Length: 334
Ligand code: PBG
Image (cartoon, rainbow, N blue to C red; front, side, top):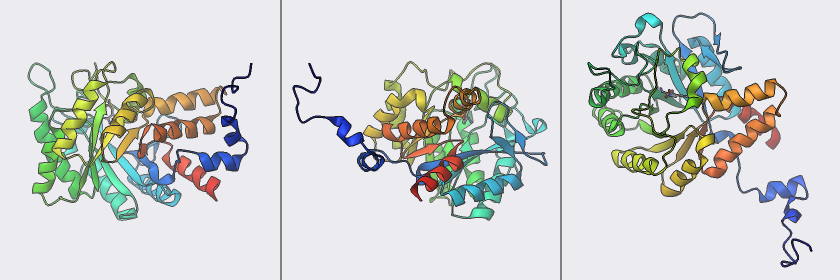
């Protein structure tokens, strides 16, 4: 018996015979323009600091951040997403450094904007966790819970200072209810009608954020399960999506990416705004660690992981490999 016996003309392998044939029939293409580089800028250092759990990624000084931005532009990367890492003394209960016009994230935004102008879409993570001494994404009530509405007031201020500092896009990542609407109002009322919102719409309470906590020197003890989503839930993501769109999100994001491809595909099917996926620190670390042990073909695994996200419906991908992957794509197209 031959498996194709009942369908004599049907031999899918014919379309896999040569590299040019495979290239021609490829349904998904990954392009440098799909890629966004997340980058960390740290206050009070005069040389970049390596992040041990994310080999190849570093906390930048303002100077090396500028260089990384220029490199990303040359590689054809579309955007950069900035995270600020203040000194420990600057952290407090309200995350004051996050709204200080001279805070490290704002300094980073100004430096990148001065260096590359509009050649990159400059984005800022809009969240308090890097700036609070307790490490939560919002301010706390007296009994230690994250206070949704008091946090929204802080986010409104953050949106304004980040836009003032030159962000083209703000990325609220704290998972407070109503955050997109409040930020849209704050931007509109301060003359930043053209600044757009990339909402971290779907964000799960994930073990894969582990390496990021080192990257931003997080002070968090405990977890974020009262505001980030339960990995068991899918329908809830559609509810978050409806709310963010109604509140004015210009683009929506799913995070983490790889373990949530089903959610990414559903979101991409449901909306007519651009959809992003964030390939997070743990996804990065797993491939780097396996490659270091010689257990996996690093470069092929990176490109496959990115192609999978495109296939599932991501228009944009935030990945710590953005510049490297863009360079590789350029070379393979040359
Ligand atoms: C919150 C934020 C986090 C990440 C991006 N924004 C951490 C968290 O929610 O705990 C994680 C990114 C990564 O793991 O690469 N400001």
